[in-house]
Image 1 (cartoon, helix red, strand yellow):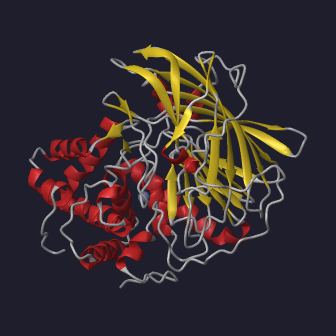
Image 2 (tube, rainbow, N blue to C red):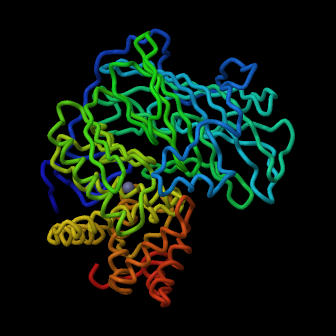
Image 3 (cartoon, rainbow, N blue to C red):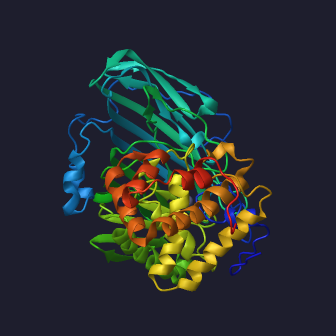
Length: 530
Ligand SMILES: [Zn+2]
């Protein structure tokens, strides 16, 4: 059984669990103990399941911005990609204004926010209600979120929560048809807890003085075949599915803490009350996340992109290593796949909260302070392409991002000349698959279709990476390179399916890959050498 540094991998499944972006335990990481109880006065203890607690009814749109106006999101893109904001003019636009009460060292934070949303009904569709996902209420997050009532085109709408509080359904005052623009305002509040690191990591909450706050606003889910994709996320996988949108987010936080967020900060105001308000803009991104803590930052510039590492002072040495790996990976994937178009990428120290987790424009790395840092960093950075720029259904076709992100760990080592490390990773993935009672399982299943979260990780991550290596072997390095570039060009800012992935690979090699995909992805079977 492989061991890497201080992370003693007890089983193959445990080894996979340490990979990244999955809510499994990380053997070998210290178990954090609870710190002092919060002194935030208004905060009530978090309880679950959250009820449909409604905030006071807004009498006016909660943020006064003409829905078609706002600041030019092209500022969040490199000059060469400024025109990308015009690619999907009807994409959803979010304006969010959130105040964060958080004292680093305490285990509670309160976020109070208002959101205004512009949603355009897609061509050929009529909708009677719109759901807003309140993901912090999912069990993978250590938080309780309330939202509403809303104003929709000036009419008050109370809404109803469902699925354990992860969705707020808002019935429209009247049905909306194709091209109609919905103007929705909604207040929300989030109570975050902790600690979220250690043996039972969570996505949202506080660890080692850091507040991790992904999807800290009501998120519009995708529409698929004329219906909203509203469903719970099986444990062990990622949670959100959403289309690229434009965000303008004002975050008011204690001025003694450092703030890292998706997009780019374009303005900052010291309020004189101990807080500072920073405005962020994003290019087309499918989510928005931030982290707040006593970070020190350092940065590189790669192909015009600012790569910024944010780390706790006690991790300053590892922060340099993390920044170096992230910067090199950004350059490698710019060349191998296609250009990262945004002006900034943040890589943030979030101790013990998984090996790492990806969000658009920002990744959280949980392993600073251990010797297992390079692979989580390059894996999460790769998700900027596979999940971020090229979306995929994280619940039903997770291999499309996890297999690729895992395989880029191999590509990274090859590109920096560490071929032994690359071969070692592939051999490790093989041993994980062999350790499972049924190594013939395919990689193309949904998160909830594997026998358990460990099997999900073994097949989707480990066998998934082996599949990509087999695909590369079958079609050759040149066609594989063309495939990566072609797939990126076809799908950037979009949402890919496994079928489209296969078609892109077949286009690159001008060959039929049906048998290979059946064996590895769709059906499964005995594979020599595994
Ligand atoms: Zn991942």
